[in-house]
Image (tube, rainbow, N blue to C red):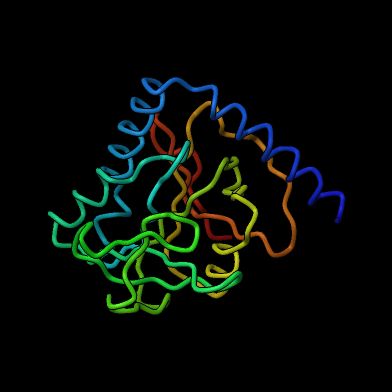
Length: 193
């Protein structure tokens, strides 16, 4: 294991412990604010096909975003882990299209239509933490890093203000996001050089 991998492993452990320390009231308030900030973000207006994730445990709950986007007539996709390395996006029309996946996380049923990443306008990317450059510290399995490798659309990360970092450790295969949103609003806009 590289030195950076070791640092990331320690940081994940610290962040997970800190997330468990949050009260349910703190989490609920944070989730509500983050969802509202995301739904009001101008980049969402242009996006028709959106890949969300389903927040479980201490992750940011995205139920409100899912509901709002479906009401707006957007095409909503959710991820499903197909193997230890592969993730696919499927179109859903509501929670009735979901079932527990291999990790017991709600995921689209295999009968839902598959969408290629090139056809997705915006991906809401999960993470334990994000930084001021758009760096992301995920759960460690690498699903999103692999999925985003050739993705050219918009990526957004929601980050609880108290978990926002100035500079996360980064390895060559780690994928950044273009926008990081906290409860206070957009923190880091991607600028083309």
